[in-house]
Image 1 (tube, rainbow, N blue to C red):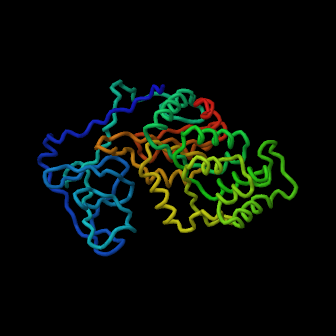
Image 2: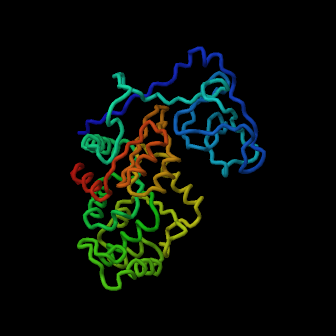
Image 3: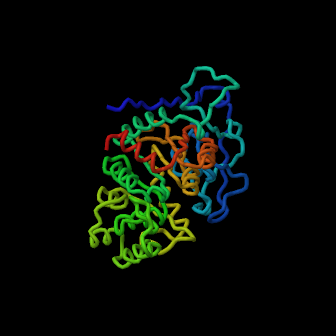
Length: 363
């Protein structure tokens, strides 16, 4: 039984004077497709309320650097490229109710203990002990398996290692992965490991280079393209291990966003960056926990599109948990600097992290 309990969300007191005396949120029509009116309001990752009529409406789903649109009695949040001429875009650059807009960053605050102004080791670095973070993460994942949506954002690093591939496959089979966001490399090298036992020509167990091994990922890509799909390749070639095979077996969706440097790529890789972004955001929309591992660019991208809260069916507001795991302290700090209530960093290599997670979850 999980010991995890979600923190309670406390909504603003809309009977307070700043709300009662606030003006209506101002709206202007989008002048053309893909263009916001002058003075548009840009969203954050925090809950934001807008005064429409006598009510303060919460944007139920948000994304940093997008704009709020009033539509059919609700606040919807759109990228600039998805605006349509005539959309009722909310305008205003203040966020404390002066223009009918209120940004609320403290709804999940539970700490009442005092913190010294000066104290050592308040943040996380390579010198930190992460034992408590792991324990909390095990409890969170057990809770989320049945009550939330866990999205993993992963780089190719741990597809190079036999134990890491096996551990993540078991985490998938255990129900702790509801979607994966990655690039061509993660899937290519994972499939190479299953097909030829190597990653970039290096044995995934002994780490020794195979003769002519630099061809192996290309041979894998070519074979997948011959079969027409990853699913057909797995079936035809009798692939019985790996991360992507586990996703296919257990019905876990994965979004592979293309890059200018991709080889191949695999048939399912999105070559259009904005179609990839849309597909990633479709998975992030329902995410309640996001774990980013060993991929700076994908982590920053997903960090920008993940709000710090989620509105559940029935209207309850819950916290979104966001973890960044990387051997580079800079990457962890970069994500923590995004201003989230929930971003937590763990400075370690992805291979050790995922093996620890599998052991801690007992899968």
